[in-house]
Image 1 (cartoon, rainbow over the protein chains, first blue to last red):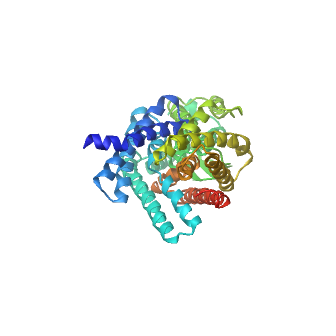
Image 2 (tube, rainbow over the protein chains, first blue to last red):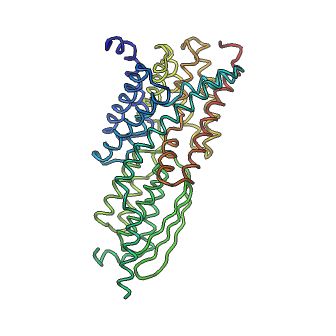
Image 3 (cartoon, rainbow over the protein chains, first blue to last red):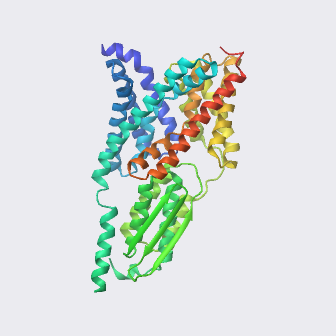
Length: 166
Length: 261
């Protein structure tokens, strides 16, 4: 079972690792942080492959890896002290529906309306899945970390000014 | 808060805060991060009430100091390529400023050191990045080794295209359209010549080069934090770029319509 899985998806996982490193170099991430992005990319691809094999729906295949990877990036951001975006973007790249986008366009060019519709729907569903996965987890972290920055600073200051004035 | 530090000229402090905000926004930070940084710097240098309003191309900063004077500065932000390396440096710098409260000239120096325009040369790391990205994803989506090779060669040529033309262009949508047409033609040529075998896999590899991933991600994060305006602006830009990429490759396929099947 594991051997079959490995044989089937080994190329995907390996190329996702290489491609993620390429993307990190492309957007100029610091050299010592490329390895984290690479691990994130492999993680998301691995989970994607597992859920494809498990037969989940197209939405969940992308939602769960995106959520897990976001969790990974947000935790890492607090450990390594860097913006979460630095880890999140390379990790998401293997999930991006580049292939579906191409086939949608190809079907439109060839004038096959039915195919184009199916591919476009799939592209939108995948994008939606990734978006929801990211938003749910980062909203959770947002509520932990940004609870009191905006309003409390302001009203503390106002109170202080009032006290000084009197 | 000690009184010696807080008596620096508010206009200078605001200038510094805006410099930080502008540079962070240009490097691809979220709006919440920018507003937070600007507010923190202003409050670190002497209390008062700080109001920041930021959208994608504008920062308005209004500050009522503890003496009761009002100051307002506005800054127009010009587009700039995303650079996560600089963003990280700026983040560290803002932590440093709030901790140590250095003088304004020192802050200016550090910002200038980070944002110094890079010399325009051919970066080996970027070339490696382009080639690895394109060829790895050509194979990732089911191509064989020859497709990977073809995508790598196309990516190499696309790097030089970027190198010569990207600095002239302010409009990323039109630039993406032109770039995808050229990339599509190159991909088709590589298959016609016989380097690659499946034109679709080679093209998918090159599509991954120009996908607006960072825009889309920032749009999501902005909307989630409540900055709907900027979120919509960024989302619209990302979607338009995606459509432009698809249209560009479509045009290239139509040009080679009879040749490739």
